[in-house]
Length: 361
Image (cartoon, rainbow, N blue to C red; front, side, top):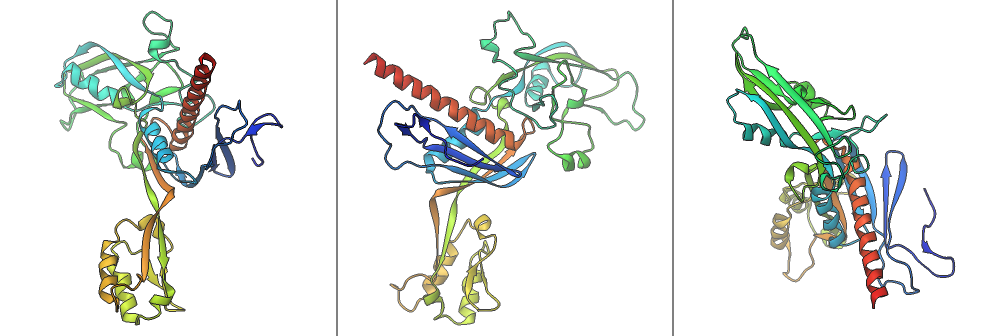
């Protein structure tokens, strides 16, 4: 997708200050987060945030958010953590439980099992926002397929295991009444290959014990309870800016240059084999976290205290490196797209409320 997208008529228009440019796989997606356009004024210092995906996998995504400030970066992070809707077990009806764990303990463990929604024709964990309604907004009396998904579990150990090992009840024993909803047994294929169980362990049972229950999954957000959180990790850090003063570095011997390179524990510097100059390592942006030792080494090598540093490492105030890992309930890419949708909806709501206040004035 290319071109310019604006809001308003040809005579009076205001470009949206929130344009997210996300390259996903081999195509580009622009996310437009609008603001009200009923005036001819332009916002001062407009910014057009961009998102560039650097690596992507079903369970993890890393991207760079640029041309914005900390408020937008933190907003996006907090939405991914607390406001992206997912499915989670919210109600458990026990019919029989003779295991060593009481009902409340098992219900708590079931609530933390990630529930994955896969739309028809898709193999990815998607956004359940359009497929289900929040339980409190549904018009049904108790529950219905529009607002809930039922799981049944019935495991009875009526035999003695040959080696005496207990029988492990896992998430694979949960049977869903919705073909598009199932527990996320594993985060990825590698985890599944290394696991000795068929899914997430719930309880261990011995001979003569039985566990029979019905669990109801509902849509919610982590702001209400952490079991609805779609991410295991959602962090960002500032892009490190490495500046090398070639004029100052030229006054150093090779031994002193090597001392500067070795003084940084993150190994963000290296000596160019052809020129002998200090240069930034190819993946310095990903490794730079601690540079205090570099400051102390440079201070000791300076001829005068007021001389400029040989290498300066600062942080950018408008570029942020994000790392997001999924719990398995949604693909990491879908979490990012869903968070942008939530942000767009919030801005639309705010814009409408502002217009309502203007009409009342």
